[in-house]
Image 1 (tube, helix red, strand yellow):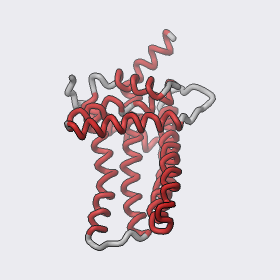
Image 2 (tube, helix red, strand yellow):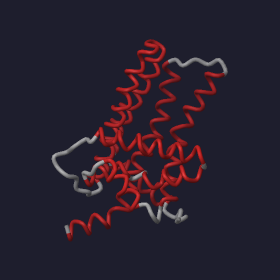
Image 3 (cartoon, helix red, strand yellow):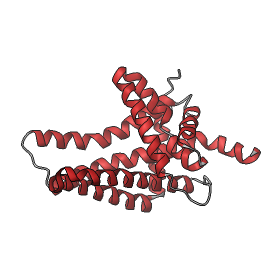
Image 4 (tube, helix red, strand yellow):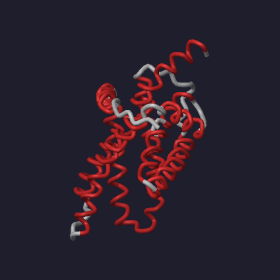
Amino acid sequence: MQFDASLVGPILRETVAAMRANARVLAMVYVAATAVGVGYDLALGLLGEAALLYYVVYIFFMLFLQACVTIALLERGGFVLPGPRRWRIASLFGISIIAGLGIFFGLLVLVLPGLFLTGRWYLAAPALFHRDMSASEAMRASWDLTEQSWLSITLVAVTAFAVQAAPLLAVGYLLENGGRMDWPVSLAMNAASQAGWLLGVSAAATAYMMLGGEEDRMRKIFG
Protein backbone atom coordinates (compact mmCIF):
# COMPACT_ATOMS: atom_id res chain seq x y z
CA MET A 1 0.00 0.00 0.00
CA GLN A 2 1.48 3.33 -1.09
CA PHE A 3 1.45 6.44 1.12
CA ASP A 4 2.73 9.10 -1.29
CA ALA A 5 1.03 12.47 -0.72
CA SER A 6 3.32 14.51 -2.96
CA LEU A 7 0.68 15.14 -5.63
CA VAL A 8 -1.77 17.02 -3.40
CA GLY A 9 -0.32 20.46 -4.20
CA PRO A 10 0.10 19.85 -7.96
CA ILE A 11 -3.41 18.44 -8.30
CA LEU A 12 -4.97 21.39 -6.50
CA ARG A 13 -2.94 23.90 -8.52
CA GLU A 14 -3.83 22.23 -11.81
CA THR A 15 -7.46 22.02 -10.74
CA VAL A 16 -7.64 25.75 -10.10
CA ALA A 17 -5.97 26.40 -13.48
CA ALA A 18 -8.44 24.08 -15.23
CA MET A 19 -11.39 25.77 -13.53
CA ARG A 20 -10.15 29.17 -14.68
CA ALA A 21 -9.70 27.90 -18.23
CA ASN A 22 -13.29 26.63 -18.21
CA ALA A 23 -14.75 29.52 -16.22
CA ARG A 24 -17.74 30.14 -18.50
CA VAL A 25 -19.00 26.55 -18.43
CA LEU A 26 -18.31 26.13 -14.74
CA ALA A 27 -20.06 29.42 -13.91
CA MET A 28 -23.24 28.22 -15.65
CA VAL A 29 -23.04 24.86 -13.89
CA TYR A 30 -22.43 26.55 -10.53
CA VAL A 31 -25.48 28.81 -10.91
CA ALA A 32 -27.65 25.87 -11.97
CA ALA A 33 -26.45 23.67 -9.09
CA THR A 34 -27.04 26.44 -6.55
CA ALA A 35 -30.51 27.17 -7.95
CA VAL A 36 -31.70 23.55 -7.79
CA GLY A 37 -30.27 23.23 -4.29
CA VAL A 38 -32.25 26.26 -3.11
CA GLY A 39 -35.29 24.85 -4.90
CA TYR A 40 -34.98 21.60 -2.98
CA ASP A 41 -34.71 23.38 0.37
CA LEU A 42 -37.82 25.42 -0.39
CA ALA A 43 -39.65 22.35 -1.69
CA LEU A 44 -39.09 20.60 1.65
CA GLY A 45 -41.05 23.31 3.41
CA LEU A 46 -43.80 23.62 0.79
CA LEU A 47 -44.31 20.06 -0.44
CA GLY A 48 -43.50 17.92 2.59
CA GLU A 49 -43.22 14.25 1.63
CA ALA A 50 -43.90 15.08 -2.01
CA ALA A 51 -40.47 16.75 -2.06
CA LEU A 52 -39.03 13.24 -2.46
CA LEU A 53 -39.87 13.43 -6.18
CA TYR A 54 -37.98 16.70 -6.42
CA TYR A 55 -35.02 15.05 -4.69
CA VAL A 56 -34.92 12.27 -7.30
CA VAL A 57 -34.93 14.88 -10.07
CA TYR A 58 -32.26 16.81 -8.16
CA ILE A 59 -29.95 13.78 -7.98
CA PHE A 60 -30.09 13.07 -11.70
CA PHE A 61 -29.77 16.75 -12.60
CA MET A 62 -26.63 16.98 -10.47
CA LEU A 63 -25.26 13.91 -12.27
CA PHE A 64 -25.94 15.67 -15.57
CA LEU A 65 -24.06 18.74 -14.30
CA GLN A 66 -21.19 16.51 -13.19
CA ALA A 67 -21.07 15.07 -16.70
CA CYS A 68 -21.02 18.58 -18.19
CA VAL A 69 -18.08 19.66 -16.02
CA THR A 70 -16.10 16.46 -16.55
CA ILE A 71 -16.56 16.47 -20.33
CA ALA A 72 -15.71 20.19 -20.58
CA LEU A 73 -12.47 19.80 -18.62
CA LEU A 74 -11.39 16.69 -20.51
CA GLU A 75 -12.02 18.25 -23.90
CA ARG A 76 -10.29 21.50 -22.94
CA GLY A 77 -7.38 19.42 -21.64
CA GLY A 78 -6.91 17.83 -25.06
CA PHE A 79 -8.47 14.45 -24.28
CA VAL A 80 -10.43 13.19 -27.27
CA LEU A 81 -13.76 11.68 -26.23
CA PRO A 82 -15.62 8.98 -28.15
CA GLY A 83 -18.29 10.35 -30.47
CA PRO A 84 -21.13 10.86 -30.68
CA ARG A 85 -21.22 12.38 -27.20
CA ARG A 86 -22.93 10.19 -24.59
CA TRP A 87 -23.91 11.60 -21.21
CA ARG A 88 -23.81 8.17 -19.49
CA ILE A 89 -26.05 9.33 -16.62
CA ALA A 90 -27.18 5.79 -15.72
CA SER A 91 -23.57 4.57 -15.56
CA LEU A 92 -22.56 7.62 -13.53
CA PHE A 93 -25.42 6.88 -11.13
CA GLY A 94 -24.19 3.29 -10.86
CA ILE A 95 -20.69 4.47 -9.98
CA SER A 96 -22.11 6.83 -7.36
CA ILE A 97 -24.15 4.05 -5.71
CA ILE A 98 -21.48 1.34 -5.76
CA ALA A 99 -18.61 3.61 -4.73
CA GLY A 100 -20.75 5.44 -2.20
CA LEU A 101 -21.83 2.24 -0.46
CA GLY A 102 -18.32 0.81 -0.50
CA ILE A 103 -16.82 3.97 0.96
CA PHE A 104 -19.60 4.29 3.54
CA PHE A 105 -19.13 0.77 4.88
CA GLY A 106 -15.35 1.21 4.74
CA LEU A 107 -15.62 4.31 6.91
CA LEU A 108 -18.12 2.59 9.18
CA VAL A 109 -15.93 -0.43 9.89
CA LEU A 110 -12.55 1.34 10.00
CA VAL A 111 -11.85 4.84 8.72
CA LEU A 112 -8.76 3.94 6.68
CA PRO A 113 -10.49 1.45 4.31
CA GLY A 114 -13.09 4.07 3.46
CA LEU A 115 -10.43 6.67 2.72
CA PHE A 116 -8.47 4.12 0.70
CA LEU A 117 -11.52 3.32 -1.46
CA THR A 118 -12.19 7.05 -1.91
CA GLY A 119 -8.77 7.53 -3.45
CA ARG A 120 -8.94 4.41 -5.61
CA TRP A 121 -12.38 5.12 -7.13
CA TYR A 122 -12.22 8.91 -7.35
CA LEU A 123 -11.25 8.92 -11.05
CA ALA A 124 -14.02 6.58 -12.21
CA ALA A 125 -16.27 9.33 -13.62
CA PRO A 126 -13.66 10.90 -15.94
CA ALA A 127 -12.54 7.41 -17.02
CA LEU A 128 -16.17 6.62 -17.85
CA PHE A 129 -16.48 9.53 -20.27
CA HIS A 130 -12.98 9.41 -21.72
CA ARG A 131 -12.87 5.69 -22.45
CA ASP A 132 -16.60 5.03 -23.02
CA MET A 133 -16.68 2.10 -20.58
CA SER A 134 -19.21 0.48 -18.30
CA ALA A 135 -19.43 1.61 -14.69
CA SER A 136 -17.50 -1.41 -13.42
CA GLU A 137 -14.79 -0.97 -16.06
CA ALA A 138 -14.43 2.72 -15.16
CA MET A 139 -14.03 1.86 -11.50
CA ARG A 140 -11.39 -0.72 -12.42
CA ALA A 141 -9.57 1.85 -14.58
CA SER A 142 -9.57 4.31 -11.68
CA TRP A 143 -8.24 1.58 -9.40
CA ASP A 144 -5.36 0.90 -11.76
CA LEU A 145 -4.48 4.59 -12.24
CA THR A 146 -4.40 5.40 -8.53
CA GLU A 147 -2.25 2.53 -7.29
CA GLN A 148 0.73 4.78 -6.52
CA SER A 149 -1.10 8.00 -5.67
CA TRP A 150 -4.30 7.08 -3.84
CA LEU A 151 -3.30 9.01 -0.70
CA SER A 152 -2.77 12.24 -2.62
CA ILE A 153 -6.13 11.86 -4.32
CA THR A 154 -7.85 10.99 -1.05
CA LEU A 155 -6.52 14.17 0.56
CA VAL A 156 -7.76 16.22 -2.39
CA ALA A 157 -11.17 14.55 -2.17
CA VAL A 158 -11.36 15.16 1.60
CA THR A 159 -10.44 18.83 1.05
CA ALA A 160 -13.23 19.28 -1.50
CA PHE A 161 -15.70 17.42 0.72
CA ALA A 162 -14.80 19.61 3.71
CA VAL A 163 -15.52 22.75 1.68
CA GLN A 164 -18.83 21.22 0.57
CA ALA A 165 -19.90 19.94 4.00
CA ALA A 166 -18.92 22.91 6.17
CA PRO A 167 -21.86 25.15 5.10
CA LEU A 168 -24.31 22.26 5.62
CA LEU A 169 -23.01 21.67 9.14
CA ALA A 170 -23.15 25.39 9.91
CA VAL A 171 -26.78 25.64 8.81
CA GLY A 172 -27.63 22.45 10.71
CA TYR A 173 -26.21 24.04 13.85
CA LEU A 174 -28.20 27.21 13.16
CA LEU A 175 -31.47 25.30 12.80
CA GLU A 176 -30.86 23.31 15.99
CA ASN A 177 -30.52 26.60 17.85
CA GLY A 178 -33.82 28.06 16.68
CA GLY A 179 -32.80 29.41 13.29
CA ARG A 180 -34.96 29.31 10.18
CA MET A 181 -34.29 27.90 6.73
CA ASP A 182 -35.56 30.84 4.68
CA TRP A 183 -34.36 31.48 1.15
CA PRO A 184 -31.41 33.82 2.01
CA VAL A 185 -29.98 31.17 4.36
CA SER A 186 -30.57 28.46 1.76
CA LEU A 187 -28.94 30.56 -0.94
CA ALA A 188 -25.84 31.23 1.17
CA MET A 189 -25.57 27.57 2.19
CA ASN A 190 -25.96 26.22 -1.34
CA ALA A 191 -23.65 28.83 -2.87
CA ALA A 192 -20.86 27.80 -0.49
CA SER A 193 -21.58 24.08 -0.59
CA GLN A 194 -21.83 23.83 -4.39
CA ALA A 195 -18.43 25.52 -4.66
CA GLY A 196 -16.99 22.53 -2.80
CA TRP A 197 -18.91 20.12 -5.04
CA LEU A 198 -17.60 21.86 -8.15
CA LEU A 199 -14.06 21.74 -6.78
CA GLY A 200 -14.39 18.00 -6.18
CA VAL A 201 -15.71 17.23 -9.67
CA SER A 202 -13.04 19.41 -11.28
CA ALA A 203 -10.30 17.84 -9.16
CA ALA A 204 -11.34 14.34 -10.27
CA ALA A 205 -11.13 15.30 -13.95
CA THR A 206 -7.83 17.11 -13.43
CA ALA A 207 -6.23 14.25 -11.49
CA TYR A 208 -7.37 11.85 -14.20
CA MET A 209 -5.71 13.99 -16.88
CA MET A 210 -2.51 14.12 -14.84
CA LEU A 211 -2.38 10.37 -14.14
CA GLY A 212 -4.01 9.05 -17.29
CA GLY A 213 -2.30 11.28 -19.82
CA GLU A 214 0.67 9.00 -20.51
CA GLU A 215 -1.54 5.94 -20.81
CA ASP A 216 -3.79 7.85 -23.21
CA ARG A 217 -0.83 8.79 -25.41
CA MET A 218 0.40 5.19 -25.49
CA ARG A 219 -3.07 3.96 -26.43
CA LYS A 220 -3.19 6.40 -29.34
CA ILE A 221 0.23 5.25 -30.56
CA PHE A 222 -0.35 1.50 -30.30
CA GLY A 223 -4.15 1.36 -30.43
